[in-house]
Length: 116
Image (cartoon, rainbow, N blue to C red):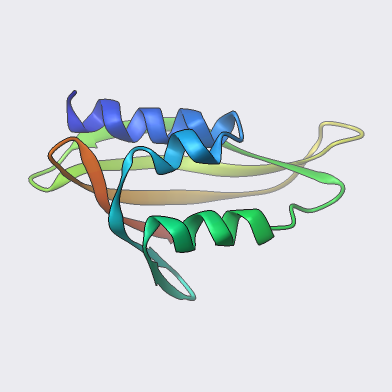
């Protein structure tokens, strides 16, 4: 599987809210880097996802995603859009860049860069 296919499969699993399928695409010691810090390990990521409380009245989607292969894996550029559930109107929108390092068909690192 190409690195772009792995990154797309990860994003598709998140869109379906299938955290287990997304985790299956990661190495055991995956590093995830966020604007506010980082975590290491597939188990830590699953724990973080389990404790995540989505906004009650908002739906969050990644839209217009473009995937480009890089020397280390794949970069995804997209828009992160939040919509009001009741009306469907856009509440917020921001650019998003996600860098995936892929090793032997698994994600070993993900760096999230909102607003880029």
